Length: 512
Image 1 (cartoon, helix red, strand yellow):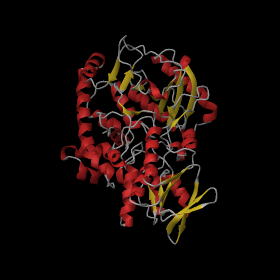
Image 2 (cartoon, helix red, strand yellow):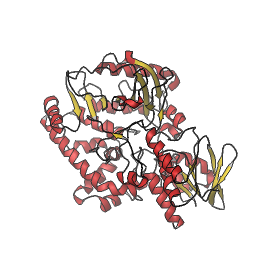
Image 3 (tube, helix red, strand yellow):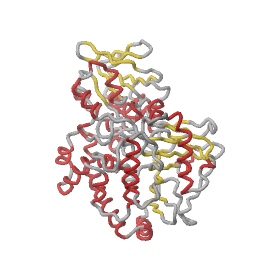
Image 4 (cartoon, one colour):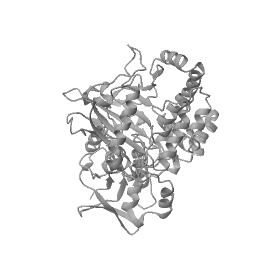
C-alpha cells in the first residue's frame, strides 16, 4: 500500500508526487487518461494532417517559478518569443512588442501617441516591482490579499496591489492614462480576461491581470515562452522526475471515489473496482471533481465556500493545421515575423473597450459574440520540431469569451459555423487565412471539459478572479485529504507552485 495516492497526472500533481517521493514516501499517481499531462499536452489532433503536433490545452510557459524549476532539477528547453506581442489592425498601424524597446517606442509614437509610450513604461515598471515583491509569496501558504500586501509588497505599492487584486483590470489600467483604447483593450483582454468568466469591469479581473504578469523565467524579461516540443515536454520531464524519485504513475486508472473511514481518508477506489489504500490522498484534479469524489465526507463549510465561487469555462480553443503562413496587410515589407508572438485580434472600432463590454454581455446572455477577442498563436515558426514532413504549421485561436451553454442552441449545432466565422475575422487582418486551413480541432468549454476532464471546462479550475487565501486550500480539513490543482493558490496556469506547496503541507502535517 502506498503512503500517498495522487489523483491525476497534470503538472501540479506530478510536482507534488516528485517532492513527496524524494523524501522516501511511496507514491502512486492515478491518471484517468491514457497519457500524463492534464491540460499541458502535446498531441497530434488533426486527422487530415496526422504528423503535425500541437499543444492543445496550455500553449505557453510563463509562470513557473525559477526556484521551483531548480528544486525539481528539470532542464526546460525554453524558446524566447521576440517579438512577443503583435497588435495588428486592418489599416496600416500596428504594434510589435519585443526586446527592442526603441523600436517599440517608435511604433507607439508613430501609430498611437507619445502618451501611450509613457503610460506603457510606467505600467511595465510597476509590474516589474510587483513581480519582484511577490515572488516568494507563490511558494508559500497564502494569506488574504491584505495580509499578502503587508508581508510581501513594498509600502509604496500596497494600496495599488490591494486595489488591483480586489478590483477590475479596466480600473487598474485607467491609472496609467493611455490615450489609445486599442492598447488598453489588448492588455485588458490578454492578461485580465484570459481564462476568466468576466468582463473588463468585473471585480477580480485585476488579480488575473497581475497573475499573467508574474513571469520570472530566466531570459524571459517578463514574457511567456515556448517550450520546444510543446507543453507535453514540461509534463513529460515532470513525469520522468517523479518516476526517478520512486513514484509509480498509472495511466488509464480513473478514480471513482475517495475512501473514508473513521473521519479520515484510507485511500481511493478506482472505477475498475480496485481499491488503492493510502494514508494521504492528494487531489491533482480540479476542486469540484475532488469534492465530488469525497462525497458527503468533504467538509461542508469548505464545500459551500467553493461552490459560491464556481463559474463555468468561457474559453474556446480552435486548434488549426495551416498549409502555409498568411500575410498581415498592416505590416510593411521587411518587418519582423509576427508569428511567434501572441497575435491580438480586436474589434476595429473606436470604442473597442465598449465592444469588449458588449461581448461579455453577449456571453452572459448565452449568445456567441459577433467579434470575440482572439489571441492567435503559430508556434511552429519558433519551434519547427512540431511540424510534419509536409511542412504544415500548427496554430491556435484562443477565443475570449464564449458561453458554456448557448441560449436556444447547442455547441454541436453552432461550432462548425462559428469556427468558419472566426476564420473570416482572421481574413480581415491576414487575407486568405481561411484558405490555408487544412484541418481544425476546436474545443469549446464543454469540449475542454470532456477532453481534459476539467469540471465546467474552466481552464483555471477556479476563476482567477478568486485570489490568494480565497482559493481552494491545500489541506481540505478532512484528515488525509489535500488539494494541489490549479484551483489552489497561486492561480490557474502551468505554474507548479500548488503542487510544491501542497507537498510541503503534507510533509509538515506528517512531521517530516
